[in-house]
Image (cartoon, rainbow, N blue to C red; front, side, top):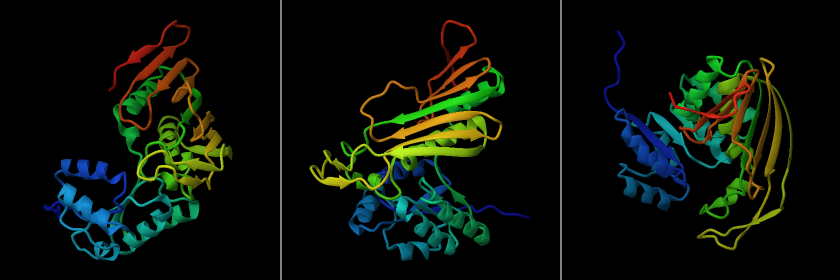
Length: 297
């Protein structure tokens, strides 16, 4: 007979940067979870988060990983540290939920998954927005044949980066950063959810400028050296024969291109922003002269 654990599942957070408040605000909404510890390279930041959100304690990474009350490690470190932290957590017998990207190269990503299998623990990674009403409504429309057979898609993310608003934007332009690692996972996950597995990828990239000037506080006026591509394009071939064009950019000032469109033999589907859970979802079938707004399922 299998018994279920009655106590909340303990979550230990490693990384208390800009994204951490979203987790610290939302995790308490789930009665089966409890944040029991926070750790960060900047221990004062960890202390501040603990005090702000009423977490039991802050501690070193080593102390967090050895804490028997921590069942899941929530890895919110910068992308270049994802693999190291996740592998250490897995070695300590902890389940891991790792902010995207899972890792910054294929070898590290495979190492994380292989280690988890060996240790008998689970690994999770965003994005989960494809489970929301917007993309699931699109999934239902495709399954119902509303656009016929999907044969192509376009996906565009275009912005001018993070240095005008983020308090510490440098890592977006360092190894592990760039628009494909930052926003690409939302768009690629959406496309895979709607069109199936990707069979082949062809890509190219550039960067518009070698330096960025921070205009946000507290680092206003500092110069960032751009180390990674900031405009990435890709052509995707899906296993069922569909093709797609993907563009992700931190170099574009403005664009009127749609987020994602799916093209079928009987119509076109306008997919909502995959960074969000909701809509709008719009459908234009065949030779009809208007777009229809589709209620979310």
